[in-house]
Amino acid sequence: MKLVYFAWVRERIGRTEETIEPPADVETVSDLLRWLRTRGEAYEYALEHPSAIRVALDHTHADHDTPLRGSQEVALFPPMTGG
Image (tube, rainbow, N blue to C red; front, side, top):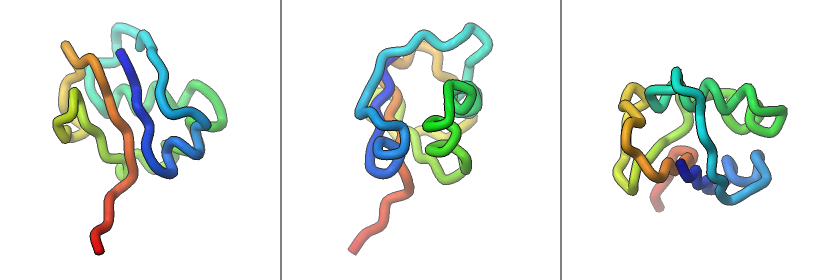
């Protein structure tokens, strides 16, 4: 699964993207965010407020309870503001 990071999520994690193989028990977006936080200080810092993280699965916005099954790309980004 490819993870893509945007804006301050990217800055805090220190990379734009990566390919991962999450454990079998990571089934939803929420599970993924929780698991990513265990991968080190940068992830913990970037994802310390998971409810603030917006997610897209294969370019479609998704809620945190959405299953990951079959997703090839997961994008993580902060809330967007207009102006």
